[in-house]
Amino acid sequence: MDGLAPNVKEMASMPGVALTDLWETTTAPANNTGSVDAAERPVKLEPPEVGSILRIVEFPPDSMWKGADAAKAFESIGAGHAPDKTSDDPMRHKTSTIDYIIVLKGEIFAILDTGETLLKTGDILVQRGTVHSWSVRTKEPCLVAAILIGAEPHP
Image 1 (spheres, rainbow, N blue to C red):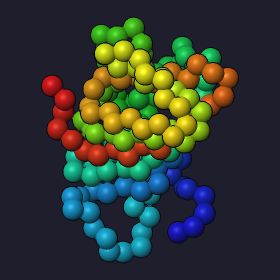
Image 2: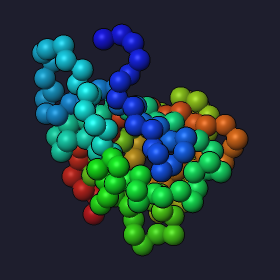
Image 3: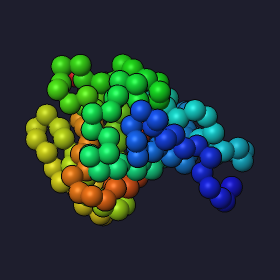
């Protein structure tokens, strides 16, 4: 169980963006038996309805991926439904999840309907199913841990 994570999705249509799933649960309460890698499956944006995902996301500087084919990227992770089609920002999206976001390295702007918030190393954001996007405005990538938990859709 120790070694490189096998469940990495490098976004071909979005250079520098990578999602690494470390663990997944598919039920609540979660099953603690067995020794199978619980995240060994194709990377999807959202967890199962009553499950969770522990994920590491690497966001490159905006200059590397702004203007990329966001729709194709969302489709490649089973989330063609997620983008906010009313927004000028092709990365704005909404999921039926509660997300605990922990910035491990770098800085990133969380862009919400209520405005933007700069998150730096060590900061934590609880994102509750709202429409959102991310922006790295420095020259260094940002690494975040994300715990995504299936939730009722936000109104």
